[in-house]
Image (tube, rainbow, N blue to C red; front, side):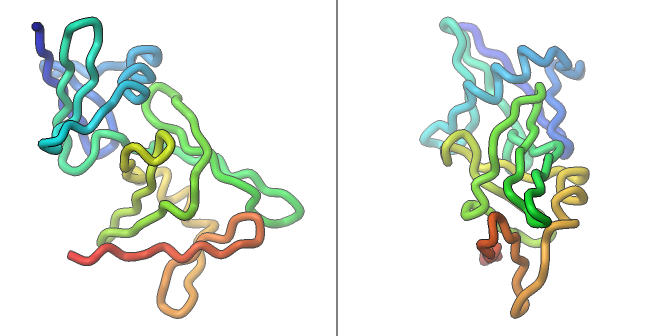
Length: 149
């Protein structure tokens, strides 16, 4: 069985042997095929090959967000990951860890970290209430828990 190793930088860019992978179809394939193994590593299997990913915390990084405004309020937020893969943010999955913001993606299967640009874009819609960050979507306020540690 052939194995390949990739690294993911802080902005979510994927590299193989020092070269950045830029093909959108390959990047979307990686996002859609990503699995977390029982020992905590990240793997994308493909036709008998194993593609391993090394990242400081998570190989999935939200690169941009697209907020949708309806009647003056935030109606929804679309997340954009590598390869222009898009999915709707589930606000109840938001978590903060220090200065980093995370959410669950792929129907809750994996954790994704918000990159710098995505944090700036989402920041315009965050508020503070009782010492907590809050994102209000469709009139419902979602408190963003801070992870202990």
